[in-house]
Image (cartoon, rainbow over all chains, first blue to last red; front, side):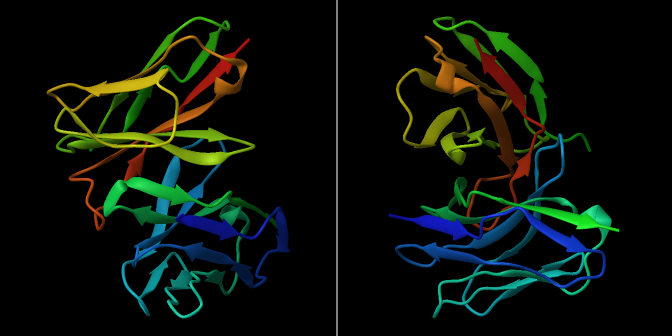
Length: 113
Length: 114
């Protein structure tokens, strides 16, 4: 069935380090792909999305490219800040509805000054 | 513009009881979805409502139910609570729930079953 697999955390980086969080998916058809971020004590916020192959989503210095050939949607940022510390979730939609988001398990990122 | 509001923020219930959680979506949004978040299973989709009709449903037992009112506010109910129902319950709203519309999440209701 449809699923999302992302790298296990936690990930600890120093400020200004390069970030990559891997995400792969299995799906029948061509879902839209998303990265959500959850700060402590808060709900999820959409970070970026891509709706078709080769699309690149970007926001706040984060980027991810929809790779159909490798079924991947890896999250990257060139220089992380302490304020980026949060849990990051990769997700796909299923059945053509936002209401059917399938999430990965989440990756906790801690950035040290 | 007010965000998605979930009430209450915290709940403690005893096994066997039932509970009702409330979600007020962003004004004008007609789609409301519910998710359960636990450390072991992560985020799992419960159900989605659109214009008072359940449009999609996840793989949860019948003890989990929901409804949506004409003003788009939604409630979910869990009957005969079990310890394993302890979780953060998140509500998300979007304008139409379509694949290309953004879902906005509330802060969640933390349910603890003792």
